[in-house]
Length: 197
Image (cartoon, rainbow, N blue to C red; front, top):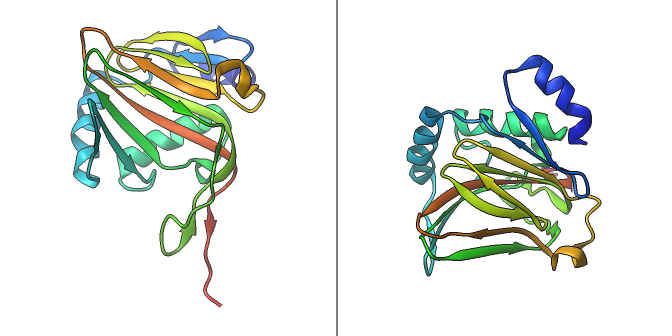
């Protein structure tokens, strides 16, 4: 999925795309976000949703349509993966204090009513993106990556055997520094509008 798009991405932009792994397919785009973009996103996301605290972890969950810059970022990630914005579930920003870790498990998402007018994207997760807002050591489906701030890492999950990576799509381990990143999950079934009859 990504390999076919790398040539197109390189020909149309100045993005630096690096292939990290073939099976599962993992790529990194090292200069996807500028320092100014990062600062803006760190400031804007907490304004639209309350954080959920869990020990040494803060998380923020919001719609990809919530604000113009957020939507534009989501559209750019969707374009690279070859998916529609309608297949992008809620995005999540995680802040993890130094010396802690987190893991996200599961290769599918349930169908829920995310608003009065739509149900969520659902089914098997076909691609996951992680946008590092700080230097972030992580594993995507078992593939280790040290992403510098501004790096977008992508994994094609559609062909991954969950048993190979202990059903874990993303792991992050901090050391001396706090880390912050945003996740994007694209599913097989798109968001559906609810029509009153």
